[in-house]
Length: 317
Image (cartoon, rainbow, N blue to C red; front, side, top):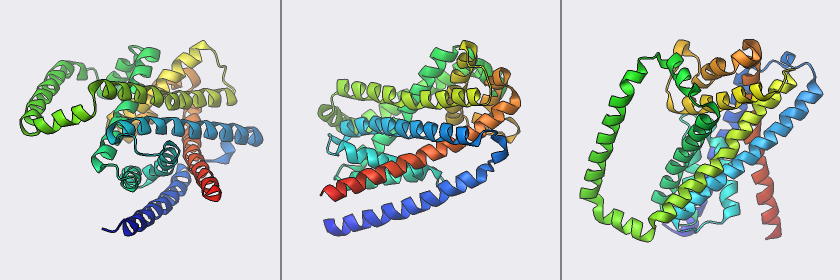
């Protein structure tokens, strides 16, 4: 296909995805059913919300660096960093579309523009997800310790522990079998891949990606603490020690566990278990609602910022 025609198709597809994403962002805000009556001091709330949204937007760009780090490794560093971050921020709102996969499509369109193999784009997205999970797990274990097992007991009952060791053994066996199959049928390709992409570089890229995924987790936790203070709570060491691991565990388990008792969302359920004993049930529910609203506003702010950056770049050209 002619390169100009391909560019036009990519641009049109990108615009369609963006328009649909913006529609679903508005829908997500509407469906929250946010009641302004929950806020007693509106000017202060607006200030806190805007500041927190900008923090989230900054976190999105830092996490974009994690994806760019992996894309550089798998795609041999062909893409411009500034444009890659703008694409990441733009594609990020695609997660509000049904299926939660369209933001990956936007990234693959960007890879096609720079003639980066689609396999490299796909691998960078897959390992970025893994880096997010690893970052959350490390923070949850370091800040919450064994509390994560108590949460799992509440969610799945203590019987899950009896299945843990057999489950791990089965998983290890499956990994060994898959490794043997891959070696049998793709041995030469894998050898070629690691010849072109040395293993130390892979380990370095993964470690950097994990570290770059951590700031957004801390920002989410910090916003919860700020909301607690805004709602009249006393921010002391005990409150921080409960809210930070509680939020990160909620994010982690919400990502890896498909459901929760009573049809409650996993993250909401975990936050109720971990944070409510510290801040109170009613305050926890209000904090979750406002936090979700700020998160959406942060994603929207990241999108607007990338639009401003792109327009400035176009005007210079």
